[in-house]
Amino acid sequence: MKTGLDERIVFDQLNGNARAVWSLLLATGYLKVQNLRRVGERRKKVYTLALTNMAVEISLKIW
Image 1 (tube, rainbow, N blue to C red):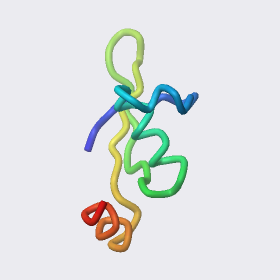
Image 2 (image 1 turned 135 degrees about the horizontal axis):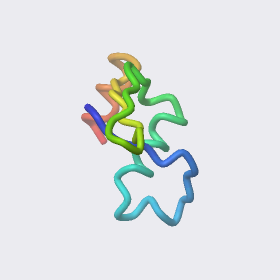
Image 3 (image 1 turned 90 degrees about the horizontal axis):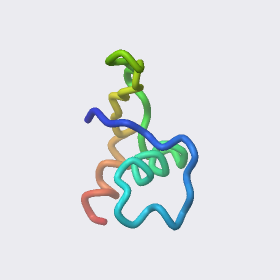
């Protein structure tokens, strides 16, 4: 999956802020960065993320 991230997670932003949710999953080890690209004139960061392992995939399917 490709997404932007919120590098400053504030827990009250998790409701309705997909970037904050992806950032939390990355910070807690459920996701890993496979690639980082900078796009556009402002060089916006776009991350390609992946699950860290099969156990994480199984637990997220149950969740």
